Image (cartoon, rainbow, N blue to C red; front, side):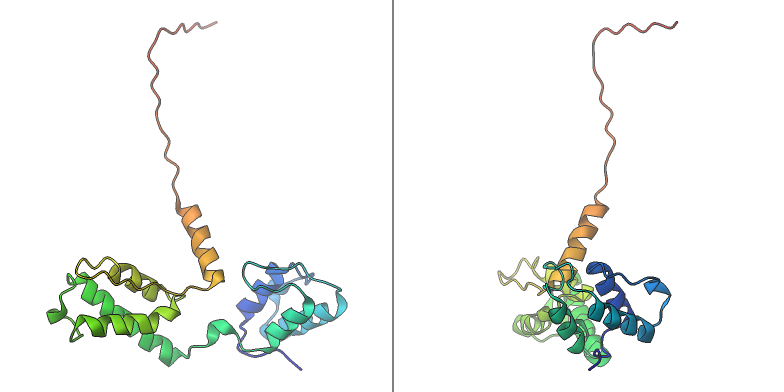
Length: 183
């Protein structure tokens, strides 16, 4: 039995790094070589370091099962993802136009919120998160739509938020008498 082809080379590299698997020169291998080395490694080692944050996997068998199944991140086809992004952009345009239904693609507010609720389940897409954020600022309604974000993307967003915080140097002025001497 082999891995499911929906797992990309980048996904496999991420698994190797996350579980600290002893595979040398993983960055230099193509996808086929990488998966071969990964399964050889999984057959030779006794246990892996569990990961409860991203993958919720604690044993080798669970990791193999994860690799045999289709990648959960890749459930959308390119066509579906483009349709979701187009809908999100239409709702963003509605929000940017002052929440005015008359100059938007939609016929009424119920249609806007129905579409927003439909695509909110794809919160890993940045346009959907932005759409939900703008739609929740609508002053004409109390209804809120929250994106459903996977644990892995949530951790990446938290890390991005922490790294983007800027440290501002502050000048502190103290008043009083000071003696400065030079030798």
